[in-house]
Image 1 (tube, rainbow, N blue to C red):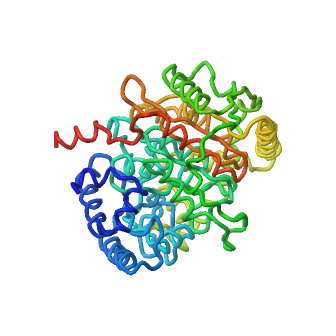
Image 2: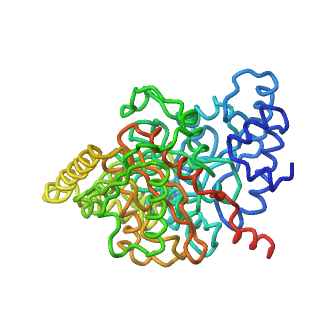
Length: 498
């Protein structure tokens, strides 16, 4: 099989070929490494690459496949991890200079589970520093670039996770989603991405941003890819106190059951005047197509949506202020030298180690938690969070799934919003509510704008209803009668031009 055709396979198709021994994992892994070498100078997906480790894992997977022992759908499949996911013996930076020398002595739970499944980990993927951003422009290693237009952002904070899949550098990836950080890059880069229910996937070994909001999730070329990855990493973990003990369904087995009779709610608050007409048109067309496939489409209301961004940026920054206090230059990470005393060392290390956006959010969070302002800001935000959660609970009395856009725009130009943080924050206006309510949500490609930039349809579900969301997204994906996961022409053109 030609390498270009090989790299177009989804995980299910690749797994079938590996099981039949028509391909070897080592062959596939080498193809991915060659693709990364050819393309990463353009898209900047990877922070670190582990070729020797990956090839060793591929050879081990080939042994499993030959023996037929311990084989899973991910055995021998090359994937990559967002660089907030701790990986034993591999540099883990969270996109920050302050962790520029941090090599963890242990694995995150999701890393362990992927390796147990036989997956091949290629390396660590670029992200906004400490997952704080909507464009990956806050990374200490430079922005990831969108394969559909390399002058535009990939989204954030899991930008590298989306570009690596879209650029055919790997067959799937893991990201984290605190306020839209899987769904936004998935939408911008034309891939599928899912944020599971809070607690469905262990956060043990994840570099924390906002602990009550962070959740690990998969990105892939197709909905089935996401289902297979989620099935591998989901499930209870005693090392995570927020982990949910409910059994993990066989997500991939039930993908083809369709949407006949499924009630899909459309919230009027998610189609405001500021949404780009092409985005609204593509999303409304996608919802109508779900109706044509047998779903019942009805109107719902989420009246407290207007408070979601303010609520999110108070709670998330407050938790970030607490979580990032540990980076002091004493226990691990970079320490600035030449300080006269410990207090000066703390100050210099944090001033030089953290980027501008991280420092902005630490200051916002510290202010919101400070004496005299706690009740006015943080406590009020928690009350608003309760109202947002109640809105969803009421809406889900009428429907099983809520459908809307992922973002009000398609991917914007690199540098376009960096001078206006509030404008940047509004990129997450349709995604933060699901995190505040702890709900599962996904993005599936639903079209393109006139510039050829991808648009994502967002589906939000009841707690632990990942199976329903995946089934609905798969029905839409299958019913479009066109490829939803083809190779971005802009990247291929950039390669041809050298």
